Amino acid sequence: MARGPKKHLKRVAAPKHWMLDKLTGVFAPRPSTGPHKLRECLPLIIFLRNRLKYALTGDEVKKICMQRFIKIDGKVRTDITYPAGFMDVISIEKTGEHFRLIYDVKGRFTVHRITAEEAKYKLCKVRKIFVGTKGIPHLVTHDARTIRYPDPLIKTNDTVQIDLETGKITEFIKFDTGNVCMVTGGANLGRVGVIINRRDILALSMWFTSRIPLATPLLPGCPTSLWSARVTSRGSPCPVERVSASPLQRRETRDWQPSRAAA
Image (cartoon, rainbow, N blue to C red):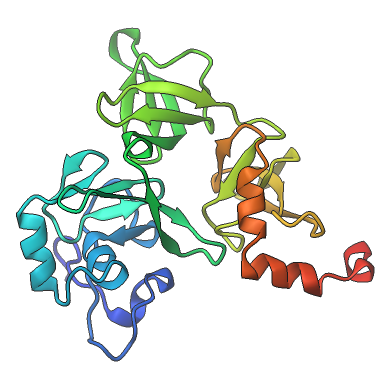
């Protein structure tokens, strides 16, 4: 009979987007409990050892973290298996580098370098809004932040810009038609497109789904659930152009045929 939480993770059972080879070992680092789920995060040890190549072994990663060199969202993290997730800001003060975890077009976390000014904020999706004790309104984001007294205009599924130093909301973007969003789950993970409509359907316990076109203008829209769509900007075509210029999008555009699209 099992007692307590699971503490191990087999390497073959690890998320595919971690890109771990099967023959290096039997086990993979199991993420600690935190703001992101196991299948939606990237442990700090994999980011430092496998992505940045700043360490060769897990022991070296631990020595780096215990010297308090690594910050996530402005806070020092010494846990080598801390789960970093979408839009998290990872800072290394000793080298002066800042990174933001975002998805590439293949649905994998990519090493995206940002400036010191960009590292001062992050975008969070609003998961829930409720009224707590004594009638105080609360807002819960996708990274488990709870903010009191939010703007009354902010609704569920909107995106808020949070100042990492103060933890307060500085700006928000509505989940409206015409805004640019990124898909963070499902078969279209990593896609960036413009919201063209919102269609409500009844499917088990999921009531809403949003239809989002692909970044390539020649391709038809790809549907995704409301839970997986996260608004990133107000109708700016810049993110779409950046993604459509990738080799994957160019290959899809080259293989596109009008007869198939019409069918």
